[in-house]
Image 1 (cartoon, each protein chain N blue to C red):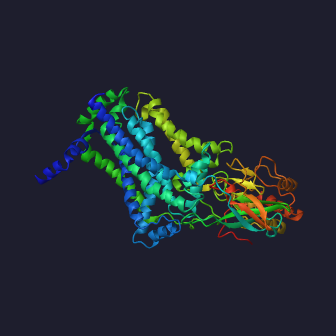
Image 2: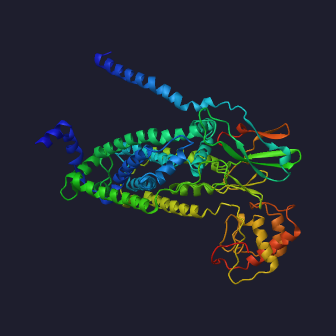
Image 3: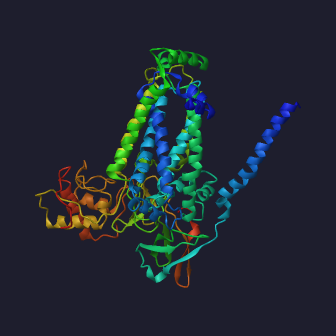
Length: 159
Length: 476
């Protein structure tokens, strides 16, 4: 190899090494949430005693969110819950399955309305109109000590 | 003498000779859209830096710090106002800049590199225009993040990972805001300013599409350079970049910025909505420069929507990157490129129409406890009056308007073509046909309430198509 070519090759190597030595750790630190929060562990939260939910009535419940390591801003979120029958309880995320806008339940028509792009769901969470292509997100539930508990991480991370 | 020495010592001489005092083909004022974008970017940098002196990117305090800038800080409202309105106008100018080059063929040889750098700038400016309003950390900001996260969630195979990457934490919160802050204040501006410098450097090297190039077909970069050089050095068809071109394009830049400035003076910055939360009933809306896109999304059938969120931006990016290599036509300029002229006109019309549509949002249903109005002077029967109130109580007006008053998801009941009989109405309310997004009222409405609602709708069908209501419509 010619002396000049060798020097050019060395310059490239030094440049690349410097870039890699700082760039790779910076990139790894920057994208670390991708593996830090996976797999998502169960986070159970009580939404109240079973008896507080009359059969057939939709209720908006506020649940507290888990703390982040060093601070948090959105401490609570609202969910919709109801009991279709004595044996069954359903808890929905308010997040529209189209693009996540906050659904509102209309007691008159018994429908959920999305304020953004026209998503409408019935009381069973089934899509009636708009771009959503799947039913409303339902939280995993369990009954513990007479209370309904939901797993906050049983819906997608942004829901 | 001192001036001359200083210019020489600080390296201004080559800049002066090669950039300022160079000959360019005569440039019309409207080619100042590029200068306008550069000016607006600088204004964003200055007003943005001013706000970072006061802004707090901790989610517990971010909202209050923006309120402080707006309401307490001397002239803070004006700084935020200029930043907000310049941002919106910058997006508009950016789209016009791209459209102008589509019409002209501004990406043709030897300007492929200028175009490709510009494509990256295009997407970076759009990123800025979105991440900026997230920093307000009001209700709209939080749901705007939600919308973007849901878009990423549709990416095949790595949707969940992308959501966590953008969200920065297990849920939307402090880690999300610091991430958006970093993207808006550091990462994107660094790349964007660098690319603007690169883009301008290439504009100096290759010039912009001149009138001379539009007169005859130009096949190669060599041919273009010859035509361009001839025009630049011609007495009639050329001019000095400084001060002549700079004056024309600079005037346009100043005029456009003045619009942002005057609007900021007149109406101030974007109003603040309630602080970011995941609890309250809310009707969030994107900023006005995204309205057309939102209206487009609202038209999507469910089978297409999830694909569209990923495919549209990807196709746009790939299409723009490949354009200079796919469009090998030899003609430049508006008159000789009817396809692209037509395409741009169509895009402008569609964008304006969709923007208008978003202001009406006829696809949105929403609870409303106010019964619909009746025409002035029209007295309806007691039964129909009772039905009017039940119309609101049963949520009929969450979707149906009466004579242009109310939501438009379902048909306006004063405007339906085929008037229904009482029996037809009753049956329809109890069991709507499969093809309409209306809930069945079977089993949850009494026969009497059903009759009263049908009574009201029967009367409403005879109302004029549009009625004027004086004062506030209240429950009688």
